[in-house]
Length: 265
Image 1 (cartoon, one colour):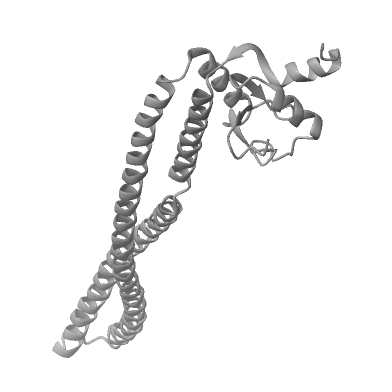
Image 2 (cartoon, helix red, strand yellow; image 1 turned 180 degrees about the vertical axis):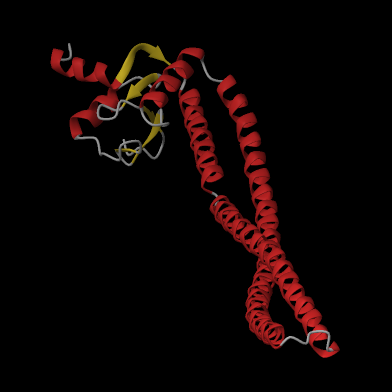
């Protein structure tokens, strides 16, 4: 008896017309999908390894520490020059004061007016020397602070550099392990895909590109494992009536629907 036209139309929607493949090849398609899912997971893992973030964080810390160290070393250098100049100013005043004191002590100056002027200058130089020595002390304190800061930052930089090297080494090991698994899965994929009929593989690849990486799904307990929706009774009956080598498509997600002994038919 002829099948009603509406049922035939729905039946045609479940598989690609004129495309047939041996049940074993369709099962093998699930193996290929498993490998592609594995490769997608490995690609995601490679990009999301926690060591990536750790290395980036440590690199940021290193850049900040380098900037702080340069600033501290610059301050240390600046205060060193400032101290040298301040000490030279003190020495210059001290020498002038010593010469004036020597003139005063020698008795060479006899004019009361000149004596008063010389004593006034000696007093002024003493005050000037005291002020300059205060400047030297203040600069020395800033220089010592900069030196301590430089030492502290150098130690911290060395510690973070060691942590960064260790994190980079761990990242390299993790990437090497992932890349090894990718290589093995890729080789296995070449073997599995090479055993599939060309037209079936072409359809699978096309659907996989359109459906977020999943081109084939198992029909398990009357449910499409691609979209997770259960087939209704009409759809199940149509699947039951389909030839064993018919390449079925899920009516909802349009992925290739592979029947297995666990399909619940």
